[in-house]
Picture 1: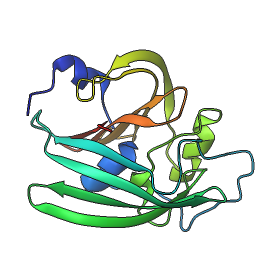
Picture 2 (picture 1 turned 90 degrees about the vertical axis):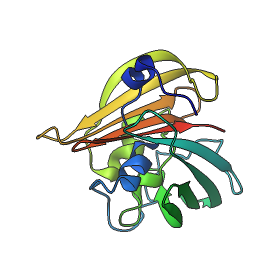
Picture 3 (picture 1 turned 180 degrees about the vertical axis):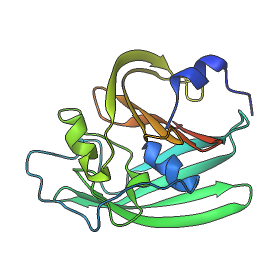
Length: 194
């Protein structure tokens, strides 16, 4: 395992951001239940039953400390159901979750949303009840999977500054390729592997 560069740290702060927040036990506002009645929002076309995504987890020390493997168990009617298996030192747990195209997730599940709708980014995160700011678009080469992305950057920070999320999503698909979270003194970065 290799240390992450300072450039990477600068590019990544918390997708997934929400998944990292959940793993770091950071508080995250989520709607009660799943609201699939948002007609203008759609799930990105890459989401389908059987889709498997892997994210590397880095907590504070600059090394990949674990892997989160998400499997979509169903995707229809604007709602995604899935399970995420987290494997790291001291953790071997599977979480079942569901989220809608508007980012409304069953209680506590917002951390598992790995997408945004590229045609309505704000709308696809509205259910998380966090005011993300659009920080523009950058070219990004992921040092873990060496893929090149044109990413949108979204950022949220609470009023006290004790909790922050930065999401990097692929502009063409909506896949969250990087999610960085800070809760107090703990920083958790999640990076898309495959």
